Length: 454
Length: 165
Ligand SMILES: [Zn+2]
Image (cartoon, rainbow over all chains, first blue to last red; front, side, top):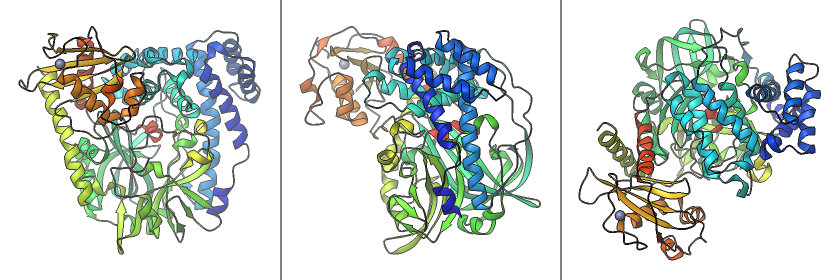
């Protein structure tokens, strides 16, 4: 059943991606330089949306863009087209997966009241407009750096952290790639994704998602690590046992950093979260009380509302409880195939360092998502007999990102988890490297103390 | 993994920035390739409260080295690099690799990692000490930004630096 779903593609998926690709290609050369082919690709969006509630706005915005007028409102409509198309692709892919896994999912409740408007996002919109007009090929050192003031202003406001972190990562890529015109290959889909997501988050009246306090036992399934030059984030997937229900949830802790802090020593930046990190490193469940759970399934981690519980084996939790756990729906504006990261337990496969053969389907191993800050390697996956992982969809195929493996290392059975090194590497060689690299954190903190508070 | 089988152009998680290589930071706490220069901050050997701001322009290879109070470095003799500039280049090569540094400075990559000075043709240049020093302070300021439990959904696009690349 799972094999069939992973082999098949939902109907209409290729057509949706083709429309998105047309829009994305227009951003390569810039909206100021649309040739006939690219204008035709944008016109295809007008046709595709003609029977939807967005029809009038799409027709108007694309007509104006093709004739040379690019305003913030027109660009918001373009970003909206991508959300609609990629959101539909997300729903079709995840719906198929849910059916195959027998996973039930709560619908997303009606959107909350619009959030606050803010002058802070105007700077972000203005840079994103310049980028869209110039296109990726028009990005030079100056344009790439022009987003920095907006990032600094957003970083200073904790309520704008999400947009700040996104723009900072995006801007760092453009700076590293500038001048983009000389780049052999442009990450067309990726930069359009980041641009469109940033533009959506830069709108003034985004709805706030509902959330409610919960009490229960958080059973860790595994940790997924994210990073760009100025952020390190640990996102923990787990099962939240509350009175009468088991929910599939995530919780996330992130810290700002700099590019010279990476690998296992990046965990040091998360020292403000000792309860969560001890739960990961010590394989314990965590008791939470009155902690906020969003409708999207994100438990907003608060150390003061958590305490370490009993030892808990993620594989035991997954075998007993994952099958019956109820998942949450992604917030409407966040739906995107790349946002799918669905926890699964897989056994009875044949593995190599590149893929898992499930019998009837071969699922690629997402090697790029095996972090240096954790102990799992392609070799330990190849020798494994059971895996807890995230199913993801990118580049028109499903891949699996292991978060934990039951495997054999030097002829001994071991269990490896991405979060094992949360309090420092448990393996001698990695611990030595971490100790050396870790002094970087101390050196920079000492400099910051001396120079920033003079 | 997917890079061979699926077009790089059509992947949301296509890798763009090569992760920097770990290096010691005590001597050269900050290096960047920015604004058309290899620039950074070098610790003074004698005075802990003093740092040197050193830079090399891309293309022309204009050298500059000043203290953070904008006093000229006594060791820099026109086109002849001082020890701070040598340390800066060494740190940049350790962090980014000689190939990326050479490309940024618009020269052919040297045959060995340590041979980058042999492909440069330095001249004396005006420094931009206040700008580079501000950039260093902004860099350090990241360490003062409080951590967050915000779910940050867009970080799905940014996997942590891999053991295998
Ligand atoms: Zn000097």
